[in-house]
Image: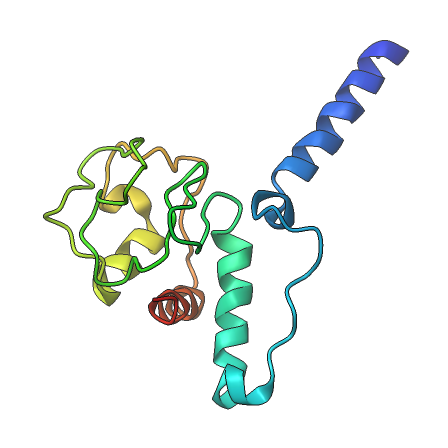
Length: 145
């Protein structure tokens, strides 16, 4: 590989890693503050939920109201109707108000987004196989009202 092509490849690789970093996507440059044991609840489930959310979701989604990114904000998503986030117009197939984002629907979607929306724009995201990780995320989303 020529030196120019090698440099271009390395630059693209570094930029790709930086742009897909959860901290970059959230517009943050420092790690979130650690929660106190009282705020986290028994066993630190809220912290574990935040870690699971950050690992699987935060690259494309925010929890801030009206902060749509590559994906819509997930603030207040639990109990909401599908495809209704204000200001986000890039919804893919079948995400309509006929869907309510309850525990069961969120779990099914997080396991396999195509099972709810066959032509979802989340194609690079294949789902989360681990049921415990999905539950942590769902419980964390419920707490973000």
